[in-house]
Amino acid sequence: MIRVLFAAGEARWQTYRPSLTAAFDEAGLEVDIFTQTDAPETVDYIVYAPGDTLDDFTPFTNAKAVLSLWAGVEKIVGNETLTQPLCRMVDAGLEEGMVEWVTGHVLRHHLGMDAQIVNPDHEWNPVIPPLARNRKVTVLGLGELGRACAQALAALRFDVAGWSRTQKDIPGLTCLSGEDGLRKALSRAEIVVVLLPLTPQTENLLNAERLARLPEGAVIINPGRGPLIDDDALIAALDSGHVAHATLDVFRQEPLPQGHPFWAHPRVTVTPHIASETRADTASEVIAENIRRGEAGAPFLFRVDRQQGY
Ligand SMILES: NC(=O)c1ccc[n+]([C@@H]2O[C@H](COP(=O)([O-])OP(=O)(O)OC[C@H]3O[C@@H](n4cnc5c(N)ncnc54)[C@H](OP(=O)(O)O)[C@@H]3O)[C@@H](O)[C@H]2O)c1
Image 1 (cartoon, rainbow, N blue to C red):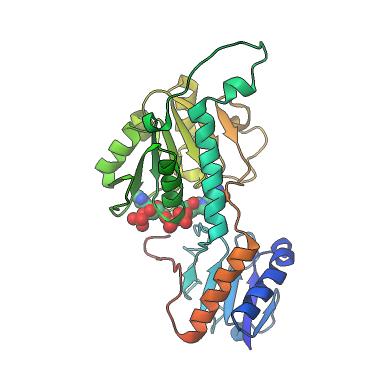
Image 2 (tube, rainbow, N blue to C red; image 1 turned 60 degrees about the vertical axis):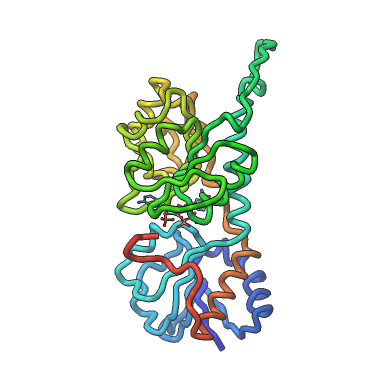
């Protein structure tokens, strides 16, 4: 019997219990899964999400892996008590959700929808938006989510560039890397989508100097992580109009505190970290597959590179 500790919070337990049980059955795994244990040394795998009380992994001396339900692992990757392999979540539901959210928000700004949705004086003002092929979009981060979003936008004929740490070659996209690549990526970006992980290298990546490289009137869409952008520099760029709008899904502090300037800023749209949620049914299949691999001695999927921090 494989012993799995579900350390991802009580609310998620209600949702995940049936789908994990079904996924284990489907994978032919005999699993005992529980949310509390007095015998941590007998636990084989830990299913983890931030917000649970678990932060000391030392007692789990025989655990073979920690399986995160979140794609972003910045809250656990630096935990020094964690010596077991750490796997992050990559799943079809997460990817589809992010593609839908990013595409929707890009189209909002591209088409200038706000002017029609909020038109209190009933003005007949026929502003024709350009075709997508004449709109330059940059996606920062070409991983599982950034790449899927960039390809979906390219399929709509947007002129898409993507930037990543290592150089990529993806048909239909202009792929950039390195500091020089970032300069090019930003200076062309009428709309920039931020889908980087939060690491010491990416924190405050969009600071005042880099925001100034964006063309006048650029739009920022950030479903990545709040600290990727310097808040004060962003507010200054919004106040001056250099950045026309920021659609922000993630923040340094969540929930975004009442009274935070983002809430009331006329050029900011706040969404409450809903860009893409891990879906229990598809995520459970990924967890089951990784446990199956662990038991078969095969390499884990989506293993986090602890050195790189993602
Ligand atoms: N708002 C939400 O609901 C939500 C939901 C899920 C995820 N997220 C966020 O989305 C992030 C991205 O997820 P993912 O699954 O796409 O991650 P991923 O597959 O690990 O991809 C990360 C991408 O960022 C690039 N990158 C990392 N460090 C970099 C650096 N220093 N300079 C330039 N590029 C760098 C990577 O480059 P290489 O390709 O060269 O490695 C890769 O292309 C997550 O970390 C999380 O923060 C948000």
